[in-house]
Length: 55
Image (cartoon, rainbow, N blue to C red):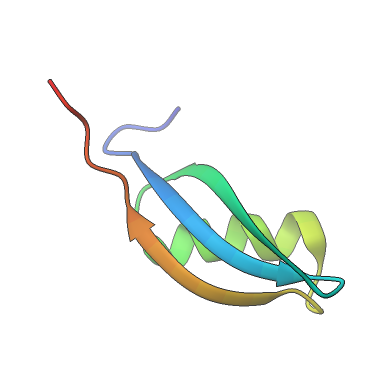
C-alpha cells in the first residue's frame, strides 16, 4: 500500500456483465490503470467512486 492511497469502487462491464471491484490506488486515474492492467483494454469502465470510510 502506497502513502496517500485510498479505496475506490470501480463499476465496469466485462464480457457483457456488470461488476463492481474494490481497488486501492492514490487517485481515480490510478484505479482505472489497475483495472486496465488486470482486465485489458476491452473492459468498459462505467464509474469510479471513492469509498468513504466510517471511522
